[in-house]
Image 1 (cartoon, rainbow, N blue to C red):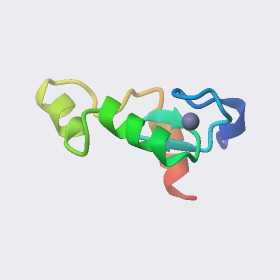
Image 2: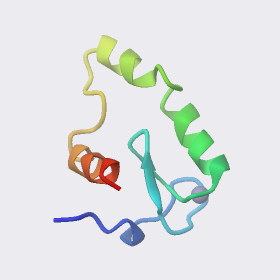
Image 3: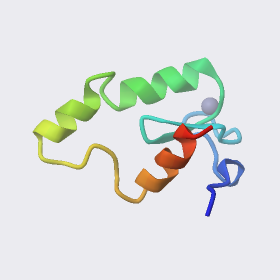
Length: 71
Ligand SMILES: [Zn+2]
């Protein structure tokens, strides 16, 4: 089932969600995308999570992220 991003809101400004960046719901505002990147620890953030033995992205978000990659 495709994820309807418009059912979600940006984690940072509350506008309609347009993207999933670093497993965060964000709008298309570059500032929010940057905030999502920083919130996840930057480009190496997922590796840090891996080193800590945590899943790279929350498992409940994984299918949504896969869906987003197809766009
Ligand atoms: Zn936003």
